[in-house]
Image (spheres, helix red, strand yellow):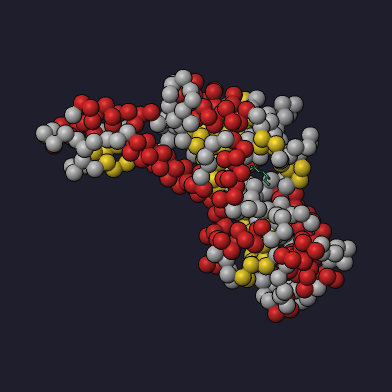
Length: 382
Ligand code: G3P
Ligand code: MG
C-alpha cells in the first residue's frame, strides 16, 4: 500500500553515515565539558536542517569506572541520553581476558573502582596495589595508606598468591607504588610477591594496558602524562633490571582489535537506532489485498526488507562513512586512518593537538571543535 511504502521509506530519516567520538579533548576536558559538544550531539539527534538522525558512539581510551557510570556522566554533562551500547572505554574489550586468568592485579583509577569494574566483567580474583600495601607496608617505603584506602583494601597474604596477569585499567594515581609492585611481580617467581625468579624469562605474568596515550588533555593548559608514559617508565625499569625488552599487550586506540570491537558496537547501535525508529513509525503490516510481488516491491527501502509475512527484517548495510572526531593524532587519527577507508578522520583543536604543530598522522579534515566537525560532515553528506 502506498501508505505503507511511504512509512517504510520514512525510515530514511536515519542517516546512512555515522559518527564516532573520542571523549577527552573532544567532548570533555577533565571536569569541564567542552561547550560546543552539547549542540553538536543535539544536531546528530535530529536538530539539523535536514531533519535527519545520525547514529553515533563514543570510543575513549579513558576508563576507571563502569561503562554504565560513564554513560550516566556523559548523559548529565551533555543533556542527552547516552546508553552503555554506545560507549567503548580503553578496558572494555579486556572482558575477553576473563577466561584466561584467575588471579589478576588491576592497576589504576581511584581507590577500588577498577576492582569493581573487573569483577563486573567476570574476573574471579581481583587484587589491587592497595591490597599489597595493606599486606606489607614495607613494599612501598615512602607511602602510608590513608584511612579510606585501608577501608577498601582486602586482607590478603600475597606470599600465597600467584598473580597470573597485571591489567592496567586506568591512569595510575601513585606511579612510585604501582611501578614498584608491577616490577616486583614481573621479576618474581610465578607472580608471587617477595620472590625473585632466577631467570626473568621464566616469568609468565601477562601485562596488559588499556591504552598507550603518552599524553592526554585535561583542564590544565598543557597535556598530562597518560598510561603510555607509564609504559615507557616500566619498560625502562624492566630493561635496567634484565637487559630485556618488556613484552606488553595494548588495548585502546589505535589498536586493530579495538577497531574491530568498535565496528561491532557501531553496527549494533545503528541497528538499534533504525529498529526503534521504524517501530516508532507504527508501521502497519502491508495491506492484505496487496499481491506478494507488490508487497515485496513496497518493502524494499534501503536497509529494510519486507518479509513474506510482512515482518520487517533489518538488513543494514555498513555505514557509508564513519566520521571519527578526535584530538590526539597518535591515537585517534592513526586509529581512524589505519583500519578501514570508510572511516573519515577529523582532528579538533580543543585537546592534545594544537594548531602550532603538524599532526604526526594526517587527518582528512581539521576543525576548531566538535560542533564545527559535525557541521562539516553533515554538509559534506547532503
Ligand atoms: O586516560 C584517557 C586519556 O588518555 C585519553 O582519553 O577519551 O581522549 O581517548 P580519550
Ligand atoms: Mg582524546
